[in-house]
Length: 491
Ligand code: PGA
Ligand code: ZN
Image (cartoon, rainbow, N blue to C red; front, side, top):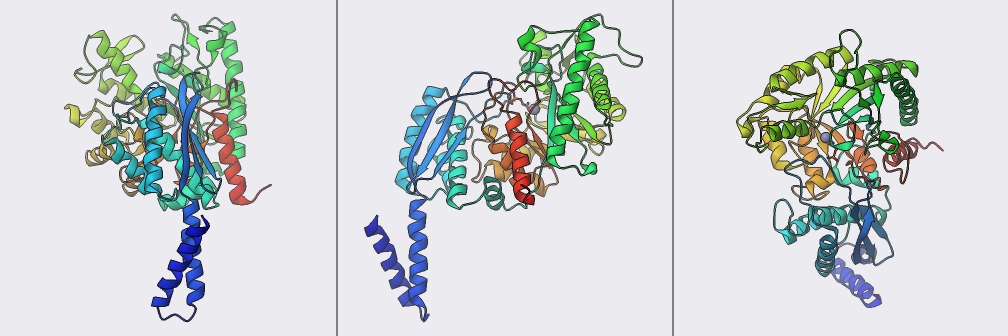
């Protein structure tokens, strides 16, 4: 190392002597020191080992160590209701092997970890496929995020600040999207819609610690209301452990012969009715303190309808299995229109499936966006899969007005088609940004820093149910609060 230092300083001196600057010694020293410092930012070791997610399933943790002792680490989450065009996932033992090969090549190239774009593009080249199925999107994204953590430490910056500089976006705190009712593929509840979400209303200008407290108040009241429903025989649970779903929201099973209050005809609407009651009981007002949102994850409804008709989802002529009936796209759009008006729903994620638009010879998303796109946020998740090409197509066809961002759907943080490029394009074209967890999460809170760093409008990271065996959802909300304190210099 000493020889290298001498070499860089010497080179710096020669270079500066070529210029006519009188202070060439200072230049030489500065230039040389910079090179030396960057030398310290190179990868010394890259290891990937087995970790576990909140479902108890195996995943990976990537650990990048630098010459100067800095260590950056990241864990990879996993989805259950995955979109058809997500970056590929390879089995954990394959990921471990592939990571060794990636590590060797990155080390050989000797790139500084602060060159995130270059490293991410290199990893895509090593893989050679657009969905990263050779080395695994899970392998690559884990390394990519660990590199970013190391890069932030190397530059002595908080991760959110480092990411904001990398993305060239002015940071901003995201609103909390708290998922209080878990349905679809995330629980045993008989709720077709995957997520029923509460969002603190930004017009109140509350601070994030207050958002979390408001969330806790409502979550508690909702629990009490569901207990009353249970006593009245209207709600049951699969078993005590299944009382909460994968994202730590409630997972009630509504009895079939339930008498709904006047004007309500579906279980799905009944859950909104109960949620509004919980919000009011907690002392808040809908449309003032809170807005409501759904992540329908309509792929699941479409797939279940297609399955009933013994068709492949991409070949199915269309429909959604909703509360026992196959409903048309038009029926669904009409239902959303009514619900948006009645319950002041501010955001609908995946209200229609990824097959219900132009490329599949249909126009569901196009009609939905034309119909209610000016009244409600329409978030693309499974349709776009945080993929630059798919977002470009969605923009071209005028579908949706917001995009969900999941780094492991994309495969890399940065680089030409990376997650940050998707965010930048979306912003340029006026799409709003919601950064999201996966249903199989870990304690890693990278997405909280990402959401702040890219000035996301929302951060979707689950409910506030029991924190065992890990607090993977709450951890992200707490991290935003930490960042807020750092920004505002609060103790
Ligand atoms: P997933 O669900 O992580 O199971 O895909 C989250 C979502 O659909 O947003
Ligand atoms: Zn979703």
